[in-house]
Length: 109
Length: 112
Image (tube, rainbow over all chains, first blue to last red; front, side, top):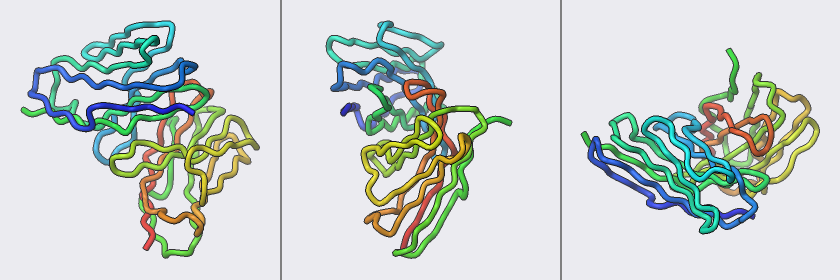
C-alpha cells in the first residue's frame, strides 16, 4: 500500500513570510494529491489538489508542486497570515487516500 | 443545506460496551469513509465503502464494524474488541474513490 511521509511536523513562521511543507509517497501508481487544512477542533477541509498530469497548481497564496519522478510534492503558502495557523495534511491516492502525519503551522504576528 | 453530518459530537462509554457512531450525507456521494485521528498520527483509514451494500477494510479495521444499507448512511460500530478506542473519529464522503473527500465534523469518543 501507499506510504506518505510529511515534513516538517511543526513549522513556525513570521507573518508575511512563506511556508513550505514537503511530502513523499511510495506508490508510483498514485495520481491524485490533495492537501487538507484542519483548524483546531474542526473538520479537515480541502485547500488545493493536484493530479499527476500537472506539475504545478496555484490558488491565490497557495501553490502545490509535484515531481512524479522523485515521488514528492510540496505545499507553498506565501505572505502567511495568522488565519493560516492550522494543521496541514498531504495525501496520495492509489485506490484510496493515504494521509501524511500532518504539519502544525503557527504564524507569529 | 447539503453536507455530511456526524452524531453525537462527544460520546462517553464504559469499557466493554459496543458503541455506534452515526454518519449521514446528502451529497449523493457513492463513496464513504471512516478515519481515526490520534494526536500526531494524521488520519488512519478504518473502513471505506465504494457503493451501497459493499465495504472494504482500511488500514486499522480490527475491532470495528460498518454497514452500508443506504447510500446516505455509513454507521461505524466500535466493538469491545478494539483495544484503544478513545479517539477522534471522522467520517468522509466523495463522488468516487479518487475524488475530493468531504469530512463530517467528527465524534470524539472517550472510553473509560
